[in-house]
Image (tube, rainbow, N blue to C red; front, side, top):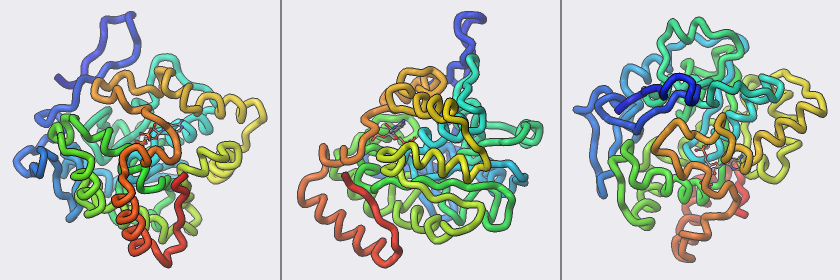
Length: 316
Ligand code: A3P
């Protein structure tokens, strides 16, 4: 398995095989296997996916960012691919290349899964370089975000929808050890901060604390969903772009859920394991799985953990 290309001429997009520990986790001796086979690695005391290797993590922390760099980050399943597409479209005036995919245009430095790049390759890229990350503030790409020239965007989503989306995403995947626990087990792990990328509350609050920094923009998935026009303007302005009406309309069209699910630039067709990636794209799909008791317990936890922070969520 691993990365391979199709027959020349049949499809110019590189096809990536399934995730595979031997290739993408690099060091396998320190991987942990929890209940229902859930596989993970501990990095700086946080639960992380196996493909966050010590070498890649160190590289991401020490990479020298430069003016013009853009890094978007989030807890998984918070709309980061949507945001990545919006950033790409803004910085390319709505145009997308025919022979590449969004994923292949992004730099996911902390990960050795999907298009890992060397320092030389990263150095050679023209600005604006777009970096993907799923790290909390204290593990951010480029070291201390407050002390480097990169612009950071963080997208947060209501944690009930994140938990449900993440459950579907992690179930039966090779990078999670083919986790096969029931929803109630997953929810308990999520609430206890034992899923890959660690504690959702710590993650979101770590970035929220720096929301007023000049080089940072804090976004909500639900705002993008309810007011795409307004949020697109905010993101473009933050990145220093002024869009024409035509560009605005084109980006709105190409960033819609239906378009992204079908378009091969965004639909992740090069990654075999991701066939359920564009699942619902809605606010409130948590209702499909949460029981009334689970919902109440979750609300209590939210009240405890985010009370007084000023952070609020739209649960639909
Ligand atoms: P669901 O599983 O609830 O459908 P991430 O990219 O951070 O992994 O987030 C994935 C979630 O964002 C999935 O949520 C996915 O469907 C949703 N998503 C992706 N593109 C979207 C779009 N254009 N509009 C709305 N939701 C989108």
